Length: 560
Ligand SMILES: [Zn+2]
Image 1 (cartoon, rainbow, N blue to C red):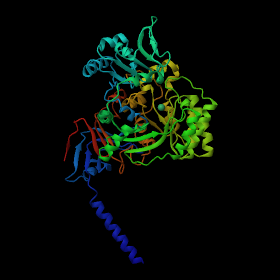
Image 2 (image 1 turned 30 degrees about the horizontal axis):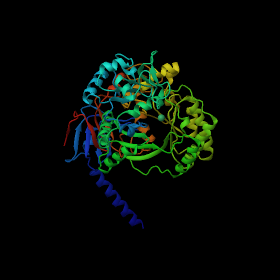
Image 3 (image 1 turned 45 degrees about the vertical axis):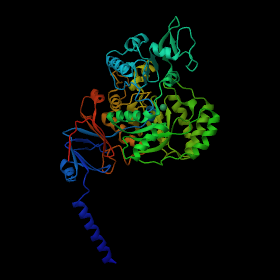
Image 4 (image 1 turned 120 degrees about the vertical axis):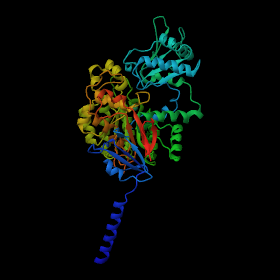
């Protein structure tokens, strides 16, 4: 008995010795860099080794070079910094595939002069009569050189031969004369019936000014009239979208409402081993009336999440539960009624009973209080502690609400609409807007919170602009709009490691650590040391998903 045990021990020791002498060889090593691992200790390493789709090791140049063999590809980082791939926990990405190629996006454009040049160039490319448009993602206050709205006359001058529709977030749309004519919006004629009453702005003589204004419902008829992408161009449009996201540093996205047609394209890419971006869907059978709640309840019981993998999966019910309690984007106050809340609770009860994680749109103080009251009641019957119930957006959350959420075992997905809408929010909320969102309060509360955008319409999509906002309190273009900021380390953690939790991938993603998936960015400058005002200007020079290069600016030399 004793003898056979010692034989086993000797055999184990021999096996260990062999593997120590011949560790698995790296397929790729990146050396001479500043690897910002974002692990629990925020370790900075010099080099990283990748084998297959995972991180083999991080360490010094010497340690990592020992893992390289004759077949190993090498990248000399020449001092450049490396971050984990950035994760946006809430971006309406798949929906955008349907329009991206046609849209003239202003994400990150800080100069009105440049926007005007872009309009002219796009009109030329579209040819006479072709639409020039975008569906949100910007606001004119981001134009640091001249932050003023567009007028109909000005747009007529810039783009005389094409219809133009430029949608600022969900706040208003600027149209030129050709677009107004195309819509049948004319002096002396009644408004088209699908436009919200009063949303079409007219001057004293009844002439339309070119502005459509009044929240999401007002902008929707314009977006609905934009030209539809031919089905055979959907993949090209989605490719352009994903390229832009990879170039901006995104490698994973939580996606409310995964559109089936675009999802199919991601599934095809995955089957080909070419997924450029990880997609974690937030979906479900939201209801808008008590009768619809009746119909949704049996569907909730049938809903199956987590049937996918680390490339595509369904992870949350959301982002809407009961339509009448879905805070409109520019509302200043909400008054949830007992009837509405009773319906919301019926839905939430069923979601908890089915054991589903919930990621729900909640913005205004009264709404958040009312939802927490309902969740308290639900929790007594069907505990939610391990279900990662998450309130999303929550720009108007306060410290007391965060304490309630923590006690319930809830989480906070923060989407600062102020990144483009800060100036508009100050018009509406006054000084209250300085705490929307209250980032320092969130950080100090100790709640698990992650950053996202809620792009592509409500907000811009660039993660380094979001990080700049979180660190400086400045919206795109530089106007100071919030007072509560966080350190650049905490902002980065919220956009990487903590967001991995919000897509149920904390064991695979969010930091550069042995065993995790090799999603990372090589940056053109050091996120940790450049002046904070330059964080928005950081450009990845290389983006990697699962050890595969999905974006390469061509400035990182690699050798074998
Ligand atoms: Zn939302």
